[in-house]
Length: 353
Image (tube, rainbow, N blue to C red; front, side):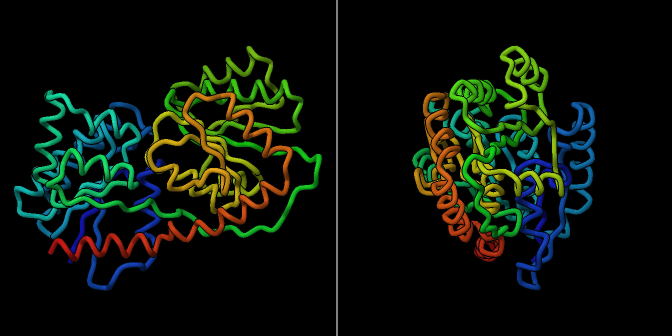
């Protein structure tokens, strides 16, 4: 059985992490062989570089499709979905089995539009050519089945991208508590709420640091807001990190703060869980399937800065609560074991042939 994986696996981002986490080990049976086709440089490339990368992918697709039985396509919403629809249509035309694996942060706004328009008609058409749809959480599956009851659809969680990092260290009372944000600097990540929360925590005279790691269109805005509100040295923007540096930051942090308005099942939360961080985030999409409120983190509605401040202040001051959440996160990591996820992928492959 030969499976072609299509998605942005060469450059960072959530989809890339999912693909590489599942495929990097020998989790699959020996009779399953994989090929990979990169489609974009994601947010790392310029617009023209991504267009060139996409054209190269289309050309390469027609060179190699003949060697594969199944095409497993990883897509988001918007432009990502429209680009990947090309592969779905032609794979089906060439009598290959097709899987659409949806990672969209703007899932509801894109896929669950109920009024009839060209976008809705196009989505239904592409779904018609898709043999199996995979979504990231039960919340999405339930809503998709209401709109597309005839489709073969299932939930598979994102895999834990790194080994669990067991650490029994507990900070002494009075030590500075390190809060981090990791992600792209875009409005939907809740960056304005993040800055406002940092400002209010400073007003409470708590012993903490809030470090923002990432990059994106709001990079300049983040720096301006930090300067305008005189938030240094408590709040700082340290830019993009990856690899060993990212692992070091996660090991040294105490709390992950992700005040997003739109997400799928964030890989950064899984990474934080593996490092035993307490987590404060929002109760959207797949996050409540990662975080049990009050057990391994706290959740609030997006935009509720009062609650963010309340939960973070509690975690900053309560060492025992942070330690309990650390242990609970280690326990919950078993739900997202990459080998378990790989076996779910394999079961779908075998059911299609």
